[in-house]
Image (cartoon, rainbow, N blue to C red):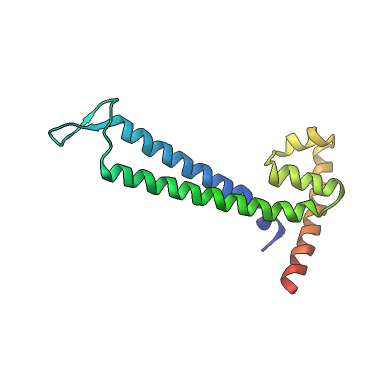
Length: 139
């Protein structure tokens, strides 16, 4: 695994958790927009009586969301631990990019460096991460 792949794990997991949350909320909205009347037929309405199937789908979406959230938390911790061990401006750039998920422009402003300067620092930081990842896989 490359340094960038390792560092981007948290962002990808966070995006997946956000997608699962959206799916859950969409399912919740669907339940709220359809009701089942006494005749057993679905009718459009703002008042809802969820069916067992609706409840099951909602529960499944909630479970997937929880699992994605837990995975994101786990990966954030792994990425954070590696970044936290990198001193100086290299660690700060990695922290802002891969933990706080800031865009390059935001990092330039936060750390008072030019675009080019931030990218040079980022390149050095990736080399540090690469060497540390190689050390852990060589053991």
